[in-house]
Image 1 (cartoon, one colour):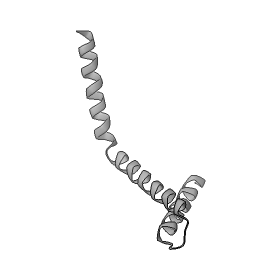
Image 2 (cartoon, helix red, strand yellow):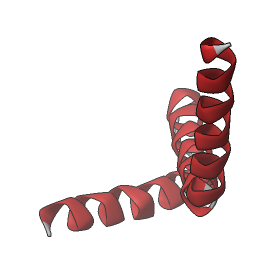
Image 3 (tube, one colour):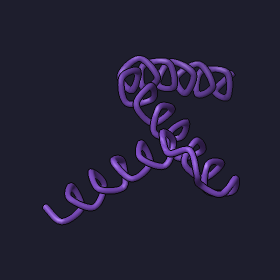
Length: 68
């Protein structure tokens, strides 16, 4: 529960930093970096099943090639 509260607060802070006109340049970089990382995590979470199937297929191929 506390993790959800902290992550929600951080997300709102990042949005506030991005739309605020008078923030230091380094804070803008941190906010945009956090935003991009969260987008990448979301894309990976959405495609997790497809990625897992692909990796299982590759592991099976490698196991078959190793047996030869």
